[in-house]
Length: 283
Image: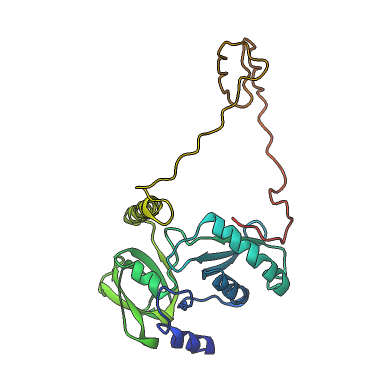
């Protein structure tokens, strides 16, 4: 086993699950690994942790950095904040020698599973695993995530397989150190759970707003009346009739709209990225 593999085995389970410092059992290689080493301390200072770094040839070269808070949340504003903090650091370190787009994203519903806490939250959910080392001649598995077992380098996850072939075991134990990639499968059950969790989060926020710090629901702050605008010096004394709000491009009155041209619209050319190639951009 290589030096990197030994180091990873030694750290599995050594930090409290769910913390910013919790190690990943799935890590990158090559240029993506260099980007990960640069990004991790920046993310940690902001209260986030790295999920995955992936490079693709989409729109030239795209560097996707997936991040989240320890509870699994990641908003659009937070993606922008991470991009603003990480962009200058990547410019200085220059790990990618060609022009690229930087894409900061959240893990999403069908998220990668890279830490023990990810597996614990994914219990009873369907996931797909790809192994670095074959198990009984097989490297790809799919099934319901079970409990974690073992300690240290022997740490493993149980999987109730849904892709069992003739003569194969229905329940297997997959060593975390041998997992090359793991990801939740987008199913109806997963979507329902995500919607339920989102509603509960909204309910908690609303509850905190009603009875949290500051003004409470029992003693609300007096509402400040909105200032009224006077009739003005050109008022006629008669109430004015509100004009209807029309969609942009539609004229009011008896004028007839000009007929649409039969010529198809020409597609736009050029890029929406005003910062030029090689400059990071938040998604």
